[in-house]
Length: 478
Image 1 (tube, rainbow, N blue to C red):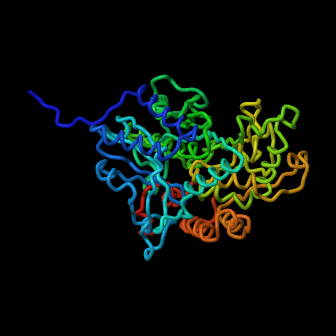
Image 2 (image 1 turned 180 degrees about the horizontal axis):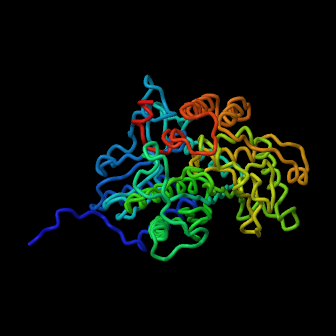
Image 3 (image 1 turned 135 degrees about the horizontal axis):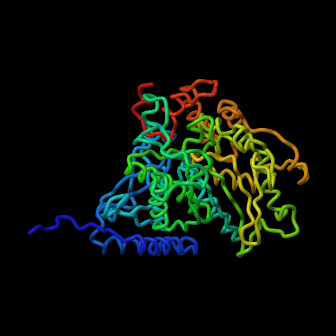
């Protein structure tokens, strides 16, 4: 008679969704973090079938890092979790390497066991310095602090929703092996909205969408995109910090599901020339007292004066902040006018080449859509930059019509973007001199490993040394 040796927690998808939506609702309702911590610690203590807690944080470039802590150890040591920051690109130097993880207990997720393994839960953390102060290069912590300050001031909340495109390629770790093969292979050529119910692309989309629904994403729609083997899965808007966490989880889920199917989910902005690239259109609005501050039925394009001011500040500083929105060598291939490239520094309700679009909306849905964001960017850095720029950045002094008709263009290569970023006093004020310098150094290190002229062919180095391709070994032997 066989006896099961392991009994780890596995929760059905419908129950997962219920549990994760409840935690999300508590975040939205701003239930005291101390109360949430007490609840989750009690849950972890009582639930014997959980073996590990996955603690997540993101580095300056936006890579998601995960540590699995034994549950019993975590419950005893949650206030003293340290790690070697010198091993994280963009974090501390070797001589000042010890950093702390501060668990953000409201950002707690139950996980689909068929993707993450049974007996695990996940929680996000902010990074702190040795003395417990906020670590400047942890953009999640900076976004959280800024959002809390806005709410404390006058109950203002920033809502964000992203439209993240990706490609599905044949083989596991296709990006990591690109320098050996020199190509990506499509698994589908069906095109926009078209795939057979059982083909590989549809099977991948279905499984990924099921998982994100179970994790409380509030799914809206999913479909194949315009380019071959391209996909997009949309979920509803949320407060900025929740939305940024979901971006990281979305990409993690997609990569893991693809790997389980022997495929690769890629979020390179332009992995294949000659077809549309991947974007992360970022929709934003401000809310106060359940009122959408961007809505004005009589305003131009249905947008309020504060909404137009928000746009004006973003357009005024567009060149300065371009690197934070398009932070890789490959991202500048996407800013190509032949493929609906959002490279024009202007706003429009209809022109999809404009950096900012004003979607058709109403009192509930009025928003702006920043189209020039690449999916490999750091979502915390993107939301923080756009939010602070839109509220605090310099204004052009032009009227609304001039903002719509005057056309300038974003940089068409990463070197120009780095120079504009480095020389910007506004960015210095936004990020601090240390983070500004460190981010520019990281981007330059990547750029200098690649040919300075993009040309018409994808170069192996722009994939090989891309910050989201987990291949530390290749970086170290360059």
